[in-house]
Image 1 (cartoon, rainbow, N blue to C red):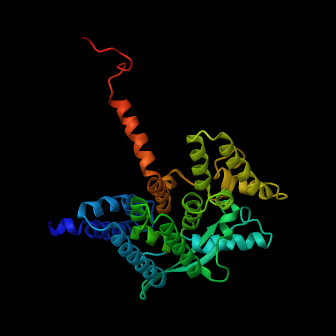
Image 2 (cartoon, rainbow, N blue to C red; image 1 turned 90 degrees about the vertical axis):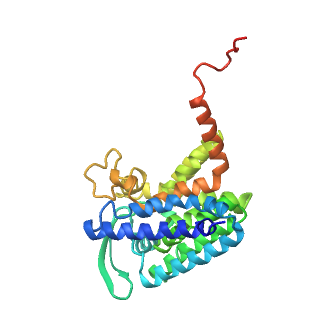
Image 3 (spheres, rainbow, N blue to C red; image 1 turned 60 degrees about the vertical axis):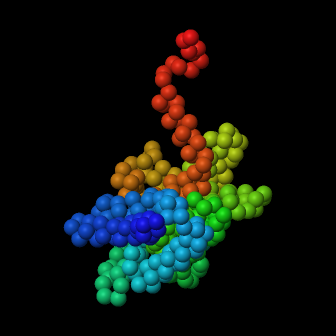
Length: 340
């Protein structure tokens, strides 16, 4: 076996991390912070699904390589958190806990603008100041997933812990564990993206707990991030479990109802979190409106399809194979008797 085949996983992962970092640095140098700044990390996140196949090609022990991959991810995440290298891709680690504190203080985060100044550090010698001005654009329960009083470091460590917990839950699934153990996803977690705690709870409901405990966790995720609601709704529609799909909508309404009924400020959550500024009556409202670019240039968005494919690969592959066969089969050949 050639060394390139033996060390194929390390080569691909190294090229993915190094290539993404290099491309990102070049884009930042020429264009500054722009919609294109994260495109290399977007692609690198999707490429996490290649890890399993490179390990198989190298004939390495998947369990042993998974342990190595987790250790590399922990090192990457720790260095990122405590040095600032590869960090600062989002303000969610700062703003998400503060939104929760605002709710506890009876201040509507969907109505009152939050201004948070902070400093992004790139190692010991370079840093720059950022001022985040935002309304809460997520569902209310996500802001209570925090370790009070720990600040940004605590939130980023919480996201890394959620990543590790997710890996523990899928440890017996070679494809899912090797995919989600990618250092790129560890780096994403260390930036403090609030998707990771939600994905951990969803994985806990699907691959961890069973019975009432799993349902409680699932119902809680309906009040956290809109991607979770969309996933569960489609998940039940595909299985034709109409009552469960209806429950997704009903329980979501329960979580947001107090904010919809907030005297004089009920339109806040409607415009910020439910319609994302696109709904009737939101024209001209100062909000966290998402543009078309946001559909492709947010690094954390890409972890969701990777997570879905990691957990449901065999089912998705069967559906895709069946769809391909239907597309390539001669039209009208079904049911026809071949000529003698």
